[in-house]
Length: 127
Length: 389
Image 1 (cartoon, each protein chain N blue to C red):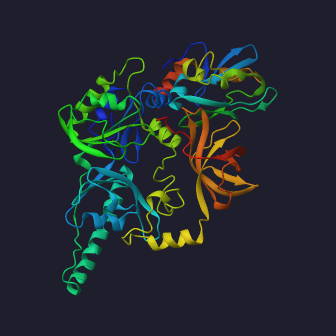
Image 2: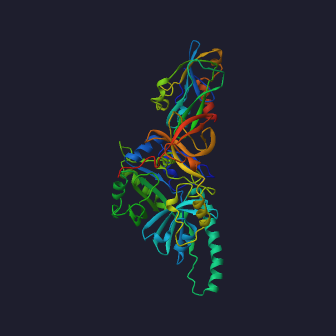
Image 3: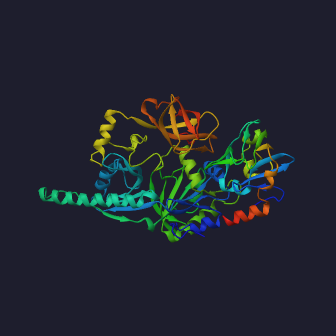
């Protein structure tokens, strides 16, 4: 399982990459593997606001659908619009091309409360 | 490691060795997909060849003088029309005309039939069939007293589900691959016909049937030969090479059958769904010379007209309908999705649903409640996919 060290993780299997007060959000390698072949991603619009742990969209594979949650509260500033042209990127490159939204965080300290790569790996092995 | 409580087919270890992602499927430990993933498995079956373990299916032998008459009284299709070496699709019905199970009936000869039933319903079917055999026995005894020359006989019934493995080899390359493993000439075996012969030296039933919408065969053999046959078919089909055969899991089996609009028991079919409602009028021979279970109810239903019908639909805006989602027409909830999924070959989101018969017309706009959003869909003709012959 690929768990990059430089990212933060949620127990719902989202990752975030922090750059100042902006967080890029996607789903983890574990999540994409559990879902199987991703075929459709339902995403919000730029300008939409979400509180912590609110469902902001969904990822659908051939077999299943899974909601995606905002690990941090804030406003959507950018959406990966091209992702539904190549939804397989979520499977192949969950941490790069498969990113979903960028959020301007209400409180950047929230990111620090998320799991580190080591903690996320421990969490996965305890499941 | 496999869950001890789950039933396993003789190919369980083979699935694990191939990286199968194992799931509990109605009490069976089965691969939902392998490493290639459902889309690739589906596409390979449509364009080259897919291999499926369907050993979990149930098999019931019906043997003896009354075999044809007995099965004809329990099922909707006309068993008297079968010739030796032919099979047909049929339904076991209850007193109300509902479907106890859908099945294949194979005729080996006039005194030997094989019923192939769904895995999850094998025990229920066995109880249903044997209970009715006992009832028939009582009737036969009283009839025999009144009519000394009565020829009605209760055949011998045997649940042989654990005597078989079953492997489906499907797709445009399936016949060619299987032909390399058998001296039995496959080309003359017509669709829904079968023969017995050796596959890689193993005594088998070789049946030109399947559940994918593709040409191909289902091979039945003794379970101890399952791994040999499975591995030999993979090897002969160039597994691992570009465009070679791929093992396919339950997920691909489902999307392939859905594109071909074939019913799945528990979804399109059930104890409270009649074959007429489920578009299976073609296997429901109301006029045949046997008063099968539920026939009166089905005749009544046909005369009165159906109130609901199974239809195919296609999403006309982004979104995926799933099993159990509600169907709305003109703002009113009026039906439900029985199977819904992305269709990997057609690259559309499709589904089957029950709707009021008045609306069951091609082109009818419907809405599907996808987690609170009412998304547009349209009724389309089925099957969604039909192979080019």
